[in-house]
Image 1 (tube, rainbow, N blue to C red):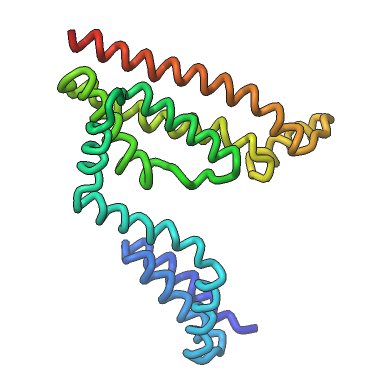
Image 2: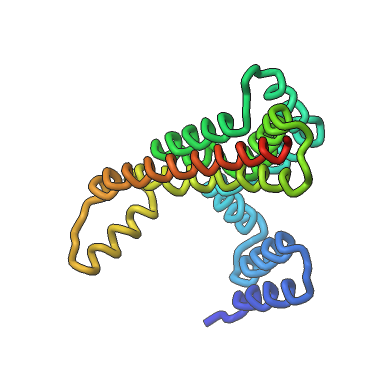
Length: 223
């Protein structure tokens, strides 16, 4: 039996221990493992390319993040603020309530990645909510500004968490189904999804009230 390919594991351990670049360590170890297993260099490269191609959806996130970073560098947040400032009657409460509804509905349809903190909240929702609050209540104190940003992030969390369970083809529903089944309650994913609707409605009502309460609190603080 050829034990030399196991040297790739040692290379991974040593590389991480020495704090080398993780991508360099993993690729180097994969190349070493393939060569020590008797494959030629071209065959190893083909195997790496095939694995990357078959799982290329994983890399989409790492492509999106630098794009968002470039957009922010060139004024995405400023443009988002300018847009909301130009909308008559826009308030932080209305904006975040609308985003909560949008997030829940899209998550309920299985589009849970259409929003999110890095791709939606930080570059768009948070600056728009801050601009709407300042438009209604004047310049915010730093503590109040942080509360607006935190509420923007919380709105995304609540919308996703209580919306996604309405979509029956999702891991959380399968987990809940497995737990109930282990206790002798056989339920279908569709049944669980239907009963997630009242919870989602309650979550929408409660969090909408919290958003409006913060908006009113900012208004009282500005007087």
